[in-house]
Amino acid sequence: MGIDDIINKAKDMLGTDQGEQISDTVLDKASDLAKNVSGGKFEGQVEGVRNSIDGAIGTEGK
Image (cartoon, rainbow, N blue to C red; front, side, top):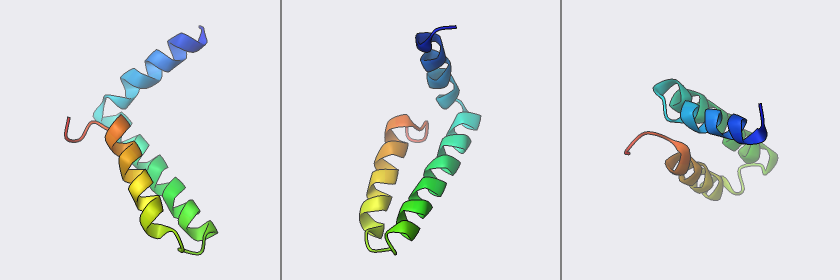
């Protein structure tokens, strides 16, 4: 299995409801970590980036 196969499988997975739940969980945890590390100083920016990524890879609203 090559890297292209892995990438294609990941793209297929993200297009499912289960993939949406997993990506939301990962994004939530990553944004919480970023907010904690920065002491909440960049909370608005972190949430904006989180939502942009979710919109790009998520299935909601598509």
